[in-house]
Length: 295
Image (tube, rainbow, N blue to C red; front, top):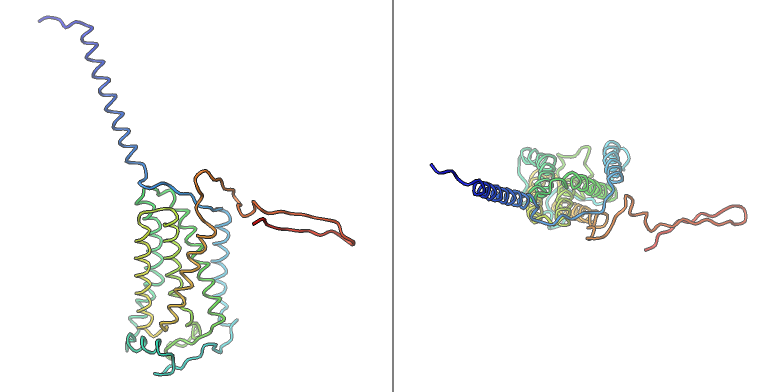
């Protein structure tokens, strides 16, 4: 057998190595492209320390308020309705008559499951899922914190309105610790606050699943509204008012406090202090301290 010239062998090996190297680089580039998120990452104004403190204070305040609410508020109503046909406005009377069930226990239990179980779990799942679907899971923890902050702020606002607008629950049989907390509905407020906060964050981030968050959250809210009316625990106007408060505050908190950071812009840990000014001057008898913000 004739021997193969050494230069030819070296050439073949060099070509093989070059081909393998090129193939490996193509694989690496393909994997890198696969790892790139399909949407452009968007940063939001935030301060983790301040947001954690705000969320903690809101949570602690709501827990404390729930414990003392009945003792702190008068037993008399502000919006006073009767419980019989024709003793409430026509809209509430119409929907109460149409949806109320004779045995409302099952609807009451289902409503509690939807309000306190399904809605929070769904909000968390959609908050994480929307980020994961765009391969931006690293943003999910901050998103969850901002959603919790906005949701608790909305619930606190709803409680404030409820303390001022005392309305008895529809059914005399459901009188109890929350007998004067029918308007606005806390259940509707909490569900729509979670929905609005998570959907607004998803929209600000530019996630592809942002519309799905709105659709699923609203569907759960409508389901809870029906169950509450079926159980005779709220009127339609209670749920509409609670939903309006929840959606408004739940969306406004991220829109105002956690807006997008435009490309090229910078943010500080306490960006709300950037335009603050502090001045002092001597006056007869002491000194005057002045604090202001440039708008």
